[in-house]
Image (cartoon, rainbow, N blue to C red):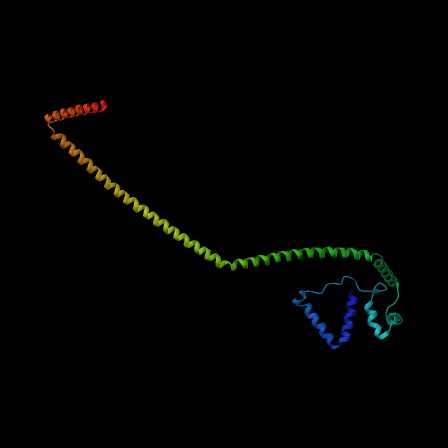
Length: 252
């Protein structure tokens, strides 16, 4: 992957000329600044094509316009011959070790690469699923928060009507309290007036009783024994006459 990025960057810089150096410098400044935390493009789902196990396809595509189809092979062969002829690279026992390791590496990639890639893809899918679950949960909570905020705004719009209703309730409560106090004062005044009327009636009754008892006492005191006897005799005579009249009416 790193070699492929090197080749792609080299081809881009080669095509852009002096502009490429400026882009490289700008990319370095971006990677050392706070903008490195900005969103990055997603990683490719599949790896790039390679030839012979380790050589990126981009190398061949880069050399095709200049050298043709056999150019990359001739370049590799000529470079190897040059290194051997100038004794820049001397073949020794380490060469065999490197070749063995390279062959084993290529065999391992060919043999176990798909299974390892499938396992890595499975782990990646699990991570993506967990991240998607967290994202969905956050989106649902934020959506609910938005709905709650809209509901609160709707409630705020009806605040004026609520205040009017509360104002009317307070006015009715004050009017009720005022009427209750007026009724209480009326009852107290009526009770005191009833008390005064009852007191006047009591005085009048006591005066009448006193007057009657005084008159009776004076009348009884003014009657002599002789008048009492005559009065009793007169009552007896009247009773006898009344009895005879009653008997005569009954006989008829």
